[in-house]
Amino acid sequence: MFSLPRYLSLVKASAWYDLLVTWPFATPWTFVWLYAQLGDTALALGLPGVLHPADATHVLLANLMGSVVVVWSLARLLAPSLLLGRLDGTARLLFAAWQINAYLSGASAIVLGFTAFELLFGVAQFWRVKVD
Image 1 (spheres, one colour):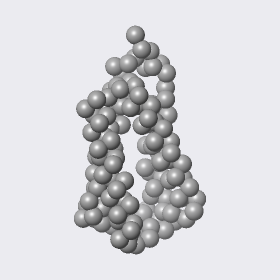
Image 2 (tube, helix red, strand yellow; image 1 turned 90 degrees about the vertical axis):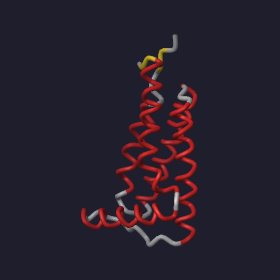
Image 3 (cartoon, helix red, strand yellow; image 1 turned 90 degrees about the horizontal axis):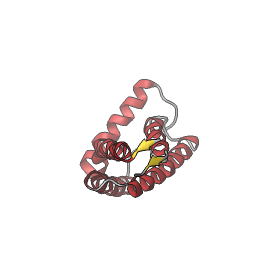
Image 4 (cartoon, helix red, strand yellow; image 1 turned 135 degrees about the vertical axis):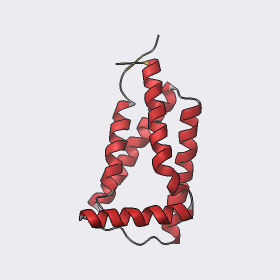
């Protein structure tokens, strides 16, 4: 069981993680650079699956996701709460489900690195909290 202050620290930690990992998805220029790095890493590690070339629609959807997650991260950093932690946990479990689905549908296994953190933070944010 978490104390409320400890839980709010977890909410902030997950927000910092999201901000660090997701900001490159928020603009076309940073996303194209990051996507190339992910592709090179997957190739160097010999990971199964495909990282398809990014087209304009792909970049747009990545930028939309990145922009929303950056703003969502700022909300949790500036006003962490039990409610935002639970909502973030829900979103993370959904993200993990879609990432696993993508991998099972042939996407590169590089996505599973992100999935591990989604599951870790997602489950942790559903832990019991002692509210005084």
